[in-house]
Length: 332
Image (tube, rainbow, N blue to C red; front, side, top):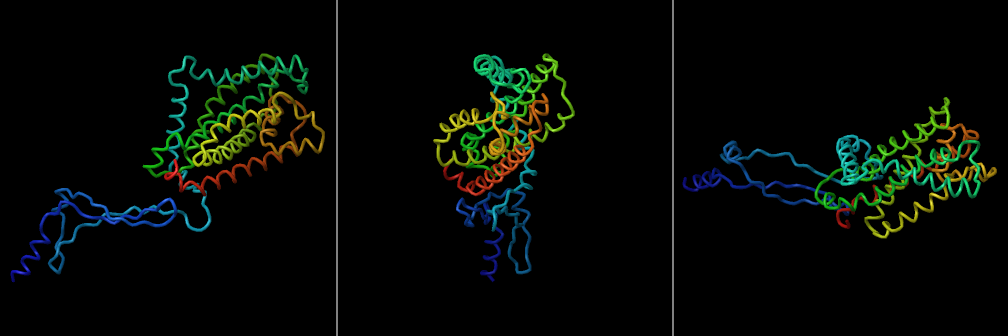
C-alpha cells in the first residue's frame, strides 16, 4: 500500500522542467538527436492528466525537424517563395545601409554611370574616334552603362553578402539563397534611377523609342540572371576563400572592357560576333541599344548565345551555392 502511494506521490510532484527530444541536421548532413530541458509553467504543471495506470502524462509539444535534402540537390524555389517577405526586408536594409550617412544619398546611383560615360566619351569618342552605329556617342555609351552598372554592383555586393551577416547564418535557419538574392535585387532601385536619366538623355538628343522597347524586360532579365549566377557562385566561394573580395574588383574591371560598352560589337564580323555572345553581358548591352536607340540590327544569333550563357550561369551558380551552403555555419 505504501509502495503504491509513494509511486503516485512521486509522479504527481510538480516538475520544474521537462525534456523534449529534438532532431537537427548538422552541416555534414547527418541527423542529430539531442535532449533539451524545457521549463514548465504553472499552467503546464496543472494540465497533466491521470492515465488508467495511475501515472501522470504531460502533454507533448510538436518537434521541429530540419533535415538536409535527400537525393538530388533541390533548388528550394518553394521555400524561397515562403520566405519572400524576408527577402524584401533584407533588400530594403541593403538599400538603407548603402546610402546611410552619405551627403549625396541615392544620387550616387546616377553619378557612377554618368562619370563613366563622360570618361568614355572623352577618350574613346573624341580621341579614339570610336564608331557609335549612328547614335550620339554619349547616349550610345550610357545606354550600355545602365545595365552594366546594375550587373557590376550586383556581383560586388552579393559576393560578400553571406560573410557580412555570418553571425545570423550561424544562429537562424532560413534559405541561404535569399542573402545574395536580396543584395542583387536591391540594385533594381539604382537601375530605375539611372534608366530615368537615360530617358532624359534620349529626349535631349531627340531620340524617340520604337516598338523594340518592348524587348527591354527580356534584356533586363538576362542581366539579372547573369548577376544571380555569378553572385551565387562568388558568395559561396567567398565563404571558403576570403581572397574573393580582392579578385572581384579585378574581375569586374576585366569584364567591363570585354563587354561592348565603349565600342560596338559591329566591329567584329561573323562568326566572331556570334562567338562574342558567350559573354552574356554582350547580348544585354547590344540589346539595350537596339531596343532604345535603334542602332544596328537585332542582336540575332549573338543574343541567342548570350541567353544560353546567362541561363547556364544561373543554373551553375545556384547548384554550386546549394551544394556548399550546408557548411556555411561551420566556416563563416
